[in-house]
Length: 239
Ligand SMILES: [Zn+2]
Image (cartoon, rainbow, N blue to C red; front, side, top):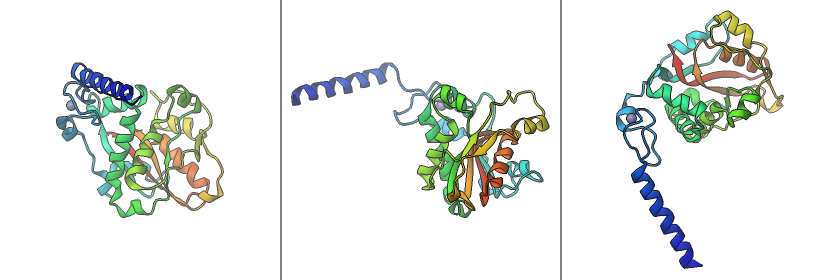
């Protein structure tokens, strides 16, 4: 039995080594450089990731999106979202290519950017931007939940994944004006009532913020439900 197990392990190890030799894991950014089993980007792509540094800037462009609309304690995005860049490709893979580990990886990165900030120390829960249940079922997961879990690992702040919910299906957001988008999303979000959440300080987590319309609707829903303070963190921000 012992020898048989040893043989199976050896064969498995050898086949993995051969597989890595024949099909090396490629960088998620450039699809060219090979990377280690537990890595996602080559050094060049990792160095080129477009960090915003917004978490260190008061009144940054993400915070300004909500000015005069809804009160966000602070808001930040870790990266600039640009077409045809490693970030755009990576987000596509997280959303449509079942790359869950990549979502956790980016969540950890987001968490480490916030972990040292005093604003982060006051947060009680991380809450993911909810997907429509049908979409989550067909995708198998909510990418914002993956980001939340990675952030939780980096910061130690717990996730509360089922508090905020999306209640009805929205028409596609593309080609709508900001006002039309707001009208389209303002009735969409709700909460699963939880008295323990009253007065809590939460961080709402999303993948990409563009107009901020959906985020704005979520913040309002959370404040209306008795949440004390809402802050926002997204993986990327569209200029
Ligand atoms: Zn690369």
